[in-house]
Image (cartoon, rainbow, N blue to C red; front, top):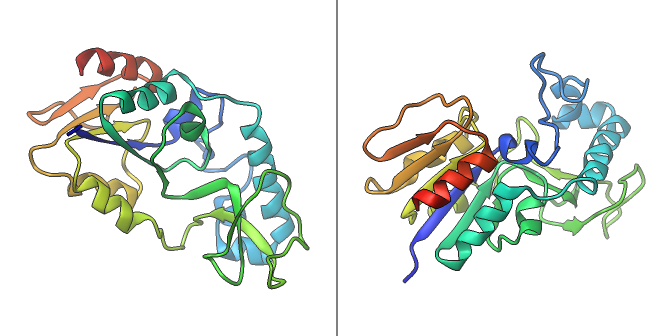
Length: 224
């Protein structure tokens, strides 16, 4: 029976493919206040602004490719059962070949009904005011905004509980509830933390690789 590797990824994973990390040092996302473009209140106040913000993010996805680290994670499936739990809303893990990906914060290439959050539709073009679900309600980005529940957390927890190896890549693990996932792995599970500016040190069940995602994954594959 193959060992189960659980991979937690964040913005640093996609940054090397050229996807800008949303939040700049000044706290703005692409020049916008987070509250304007990533909250239900912002959407209610100015839906056109919010829709255009995500239209631009969606367009950017078609200009980038999975990087070496994405592909290395997919390669692990040859020898391991691999579950990817990502905070990223892009589809780069899937395009690299990973078959089991959970998106905690939603997906850019999907939209959903403002009336029924379970009515989710694949979407690759611009989303505009007047685009509606089958019942006539406005569609919105399928993104978990600040102040909203993270519906995939229970599934992510159950996956972490069965991890033989945990990889944390490109995320500081400071943002909850995602940051809490590492507390659900079994006590015997070894964790590998890949980050150029690690906030933790290596220990008996923890190996820190102070590199970016592409170099760190190369070192990890040699280690495994």
